[in-house]
Image 1 (tube, helix red, strand yellow):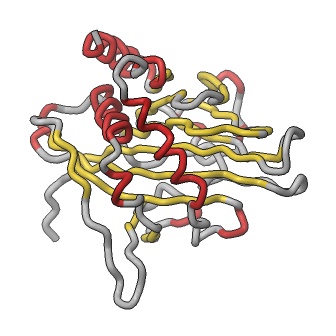
Image 2 (image 1 turned 180 degrees about the vertical axis):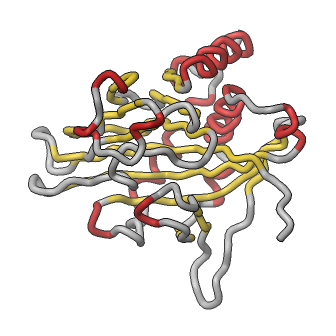
Length: 262
């Protein structure tokens, strides 16, 4: 039944360029939700984003590959700079205006978490929804796994994403899975047409917006096909219930591997 459901979702995804789904409901009978708490625990001590310490954004990042013809998942090794802690590098070329043609190095996802059955299923479930030219699937698919938290404890501050405007990522497919949303004002997702990329949300013609929504429940999710849409998440501000606002999510992107001889 799960394969039928995934196939139906993939057809919707191909038609509109984005898809929303509730992974918690779809995995409810699998036993995999028993592995949610260790994932959530990772966010309690995420290191600050070293490239934007004043944004109140925290993150870890690791890379993997999927072998399409067997659906095997293999994690790639970390980079160990001389006399430094292990890191994992992330590169978006010209797609992120804030870090154009710049390699960024983040603390990796803990090794014990890489074997978490729920995280592995999230990665493979998303992949089943993606759609590719058949020749692409004769090579491994690169997977980027981001643990990102936006956290605010000052009523005059705001935690923002990068880049902080409507954009495209460069990776053909990206998925977002909410882990926790607590005492948050903001964090509104916008899905718009591709020509909106590079603009601020308030500059966009409302007719070019496909949908706006908030992720509110654990494992509430969405995916985008980068060439078909642009997207944005608004900044997070402190609500009125407690002293801290937090929005935590796992972002997973998928990129084909290619042979390049220079």
